[in-house]
Length: 89
Image 1 (tube, rainbow, N blue to C red):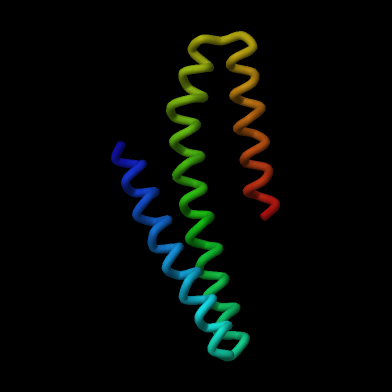
Image 2: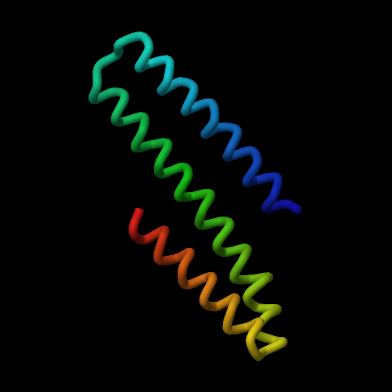
């Protein structure tokens, strides 16, 4: 529950950042300044992704590993795929 509140708060801030970036583009602000803000928003999203990944590993994957079998294999594959997507982006 605490992580969920943290995630929602961060996403709300990111939403504000994105609106600010849109406004900068509409106002014709300097491209490099817009790119700097986009980079900051990307970093903020990656931070949220890492919180979600950590939560998934510590709850879903841990529970599935304790159960074993196909469920554990599926959750590990799912986590590996998510990590690979994060690394590529």
